[in-house]
Length: 127
Image (cartoon, rainbow, N blue to C red; front, top):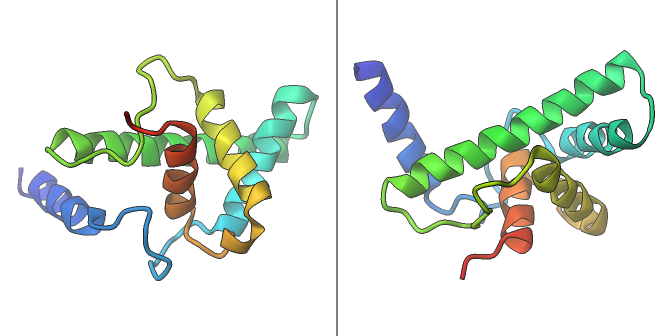
């Protein structure tokens, strides 16, 4: 129980300004996100190598992880940053992230989590 409380406290402290700051430490960069989500987009169109399948899986998993974390924090009475429909698919989450990266190369230096939140805000604005 203590471990879950500690993780939850960390997430709450980390959530303030989620998707807003440019000076945040990240284990996964916008550069890596572009590479891996590009592999995801390519894998949906054509046959790709095992390495590209692995990169695509990393992208999809990271985007879903950020989205799930956003949903969990929002459930704790925070205002949502984006409002994806309940039946959204992985592709419907990853494709706008890739488009955002391609369309905003000046933001690629941001952390992957910030990029994902910003992209999903544009794709799924809240009413």
